Length: 478
Image (cartoon, rainbow, N blue to C red):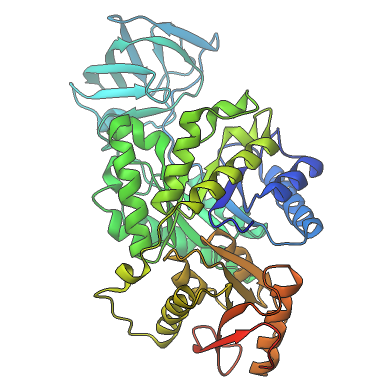
């Protein structure tokens, strides 16, 4: 069956063999995430090559997303690997400390003391440990433990409510962008952006680094800082999409605030013609268990019903025991949720104006296919813009986007309800349309007698040139 919602999965130790990765792709993996918080440049390069090889074996394109580490603020290392913090006891975060002990620990972000004041609340290890700041003296942040527990090497630090000044792009990120472009990444996910400037800087660096390889990656903003919420529209405008990164975001704004923010972000992204990925702990129990919990099934299904383009796996596929089964389970949940999703196409089009010819053709194709009960929409596209606009509205009519460009094909692998396919270019419109129908029929997506809505641009081969809509029955002479 045609699945509209896409699946992004992180590859790591559990999924870095060709056999497992190929099974993951065949199970429904659409985009591979390379987590630059772990591993070397050579590790990422080898995994990228494996992705391309396995995708060729599977007979389709699979996109690669390079996920930058960003300014993840962490404690340093302990001389014994960890300590135990007791409620009510003092503990010091010391920017000049080399090796931590039971009384204090170092910091990887040396400017943290400048960002804090007495009364601030620090959340460590994804909020499992809570420290109240009592005073700041030079390089030392003196705290009192409110919620204790085991604190081990390199655990993350967040300030409740946000407000830390660490820049979104570190020196490591800048080097990682160059690595990502050299291995042909299709998407770059930027961690902890606060505003449009952070995303514009990342895009400029990626475009410069990608120029020798002919790559202009799509830029994804990971929304995980409290400061990003009021700046969400400007971040969307400067990005190609956003990721609802529920881990660090929940630590900063509180768990209870996240579900409503998730719905708001998905709605805003779709209204802005941008992509949206829902991430973090979606199938967390499947790190160790062969089936998900009922709550996880509901979580994935609700993200689908909200209209997310993609759902994402992290540790489940990178380090879990069941990476292939997790993707199979996620794909099945997406399919079932999509069956019950209501189309509101007519309502979507009320009070909308389309000033571009290509966008008007895209919307006309959607409207026509929906009301005529067409089997498929087939879009011949160079850049993928026509398919993106169509994918912002749900019609239950699958969209097949045919392009001669491998880069466009991979980028469209993240677009909801869009199946990208390769079509060798032709300068003759009727020949290209006939070839497009033959490709869709050969893949089993349509059969003789089915009604199909086609969009194409003349003259052929120009991005942004879609200007023709055609309705045909498969088997008729074009």
